[in-house]
Image 1 (cartoon, rainbow, N blue to C red):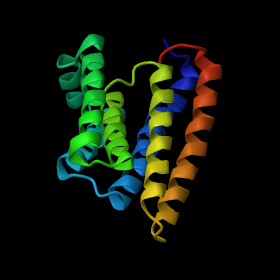
Image 2: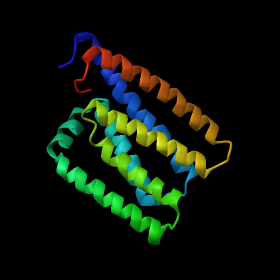
Image 3: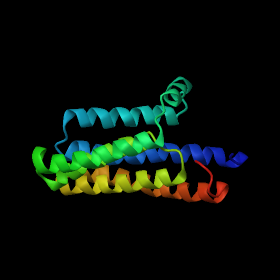
Length: 173
């Protein structure tokens, strides 16, 4: 599946992708007024994905056994979109807050579906929107180190993405 020399780059890409999403999540967790259940759901999803990425075999085997089908994930995504409209109309009644909640649900869904290269691109786009949402939520100075960490991880992740694309040209990460 992989060339011999590309495995460390692929592992580094998986790790940096999760860290990029984590940096965006930290920005939102500190800047936006997120509900506790969403903080817990997204934070635990990031931790599980990070442990899976680091190669915790027991966790990987357990997750492979309870893997949902593509159709199930698509249904969850449609339900999240319906939840966005409900959130916008009746719960938060704010477009930014409802959009951030929807983005985090999409991030959770995507974290459990990082199978192909396009899935990583989707995670990068979601992370970018999340860091922009956190920028819109705060004007405090604490945001600067979070944003700089996101930028550093973003550059590193995109470099790794490019390096792995050249080594395995279209195969799964």
